[in-house]
Image (cartoon, rainbow over all chains, first blue to last red; front, side, top):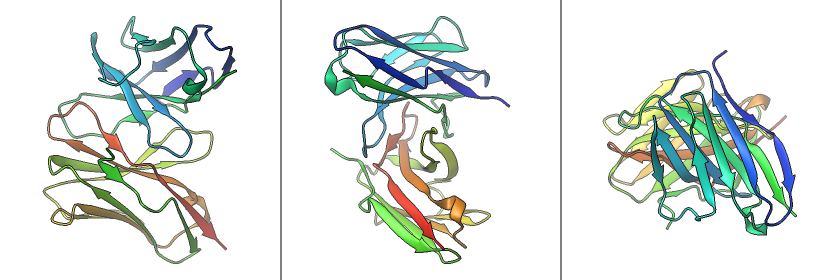
Length: 114
Length: 112
């Protein structure tokens, strides 16, 4: 089955220690998204890649960065995580951004900053 | 500024009855609306969508209704089953926008 796979599923890291979350897809979709979801809140878009074009949301903190080395993989890098970055991080994909269509989500990485 | 609002954090419905989940939005530019279902420890799964040119879309037990004048949509599940117990997210996007905006979710519990 075509899927969106996130690794690791759970990550615990120390305050200030860089962390990288991974997302891969077998859907061959052009667009990959990263969301942050805190408890009982709506998923919040951090940024997305349309092919190789990076699009950052205006309110995404500067210590959040992303890389997309190829169509299948996308990484979320948090350079110096703070306690407030504890959240679920969701990766999603879609074929395009210009047509009305749903996004397909991975199962998320639950990140805890200690 | 919440553009998509789900004002009921939780809802409990008896098995076999109808579940109605509600969603309000503020941005009149939204033209595409979606419902996602999320089980614990899993990512959101797309359930059903509706374009603003329609006022109803049906898929099996799931029907979404859109009232553009009231900026309101609802998801009806008939009949409700135990496997429907999950968090349901309403989401919306504007024409040619590159993102969808999510509500904060409603936790639906189906009781026997």
